[in-house]
Length: 177
Image 1 (cartoon, rainbow, N blue to C red):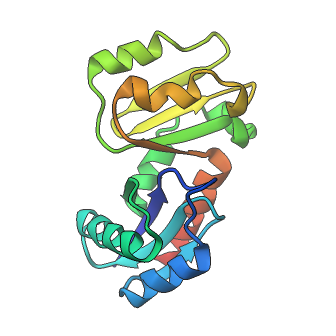
Image 2 (cartoon, helix red, strand yellow):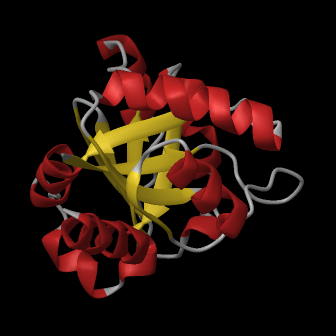
Image 3 (spheres, rainbow, N blue to C red):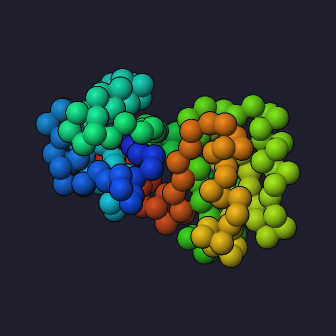
């Protein structure tokens, strides 16, 4: 069995995935150790299926039961551990709400990465590593002009979590194993 972290894009505001019903639907579908973390599109579960199969099954279930049709990111615990380990901003974890991990559905083109890096302000810092983007915003994400534009500039689907959430999801995934 593999432990997976499930990140739903765009949960919040008008788009909701109620945590208790989500856990029930995923459990009834045969996933193991299903847990959710805060009401913003985070789940952890185990499965003997590959990530792509898990994603397809969850997409069908969430569309049917919750009318949720946005992107779903399924990351194995092992791959998530690598993302956490590769964080180039170790010092910034002291203020975990100002450091964000963006998970990218696909690797962006080099021209898009260059365009994004060209828009980084002197107070922000970012690093891209394959399917992960690390974004440090010392003044906070809500003050960042670049943060909300990252997906449009890169041209790939993304979802982001602050470092507190990243570490909590990592811990939950380890517990589920």
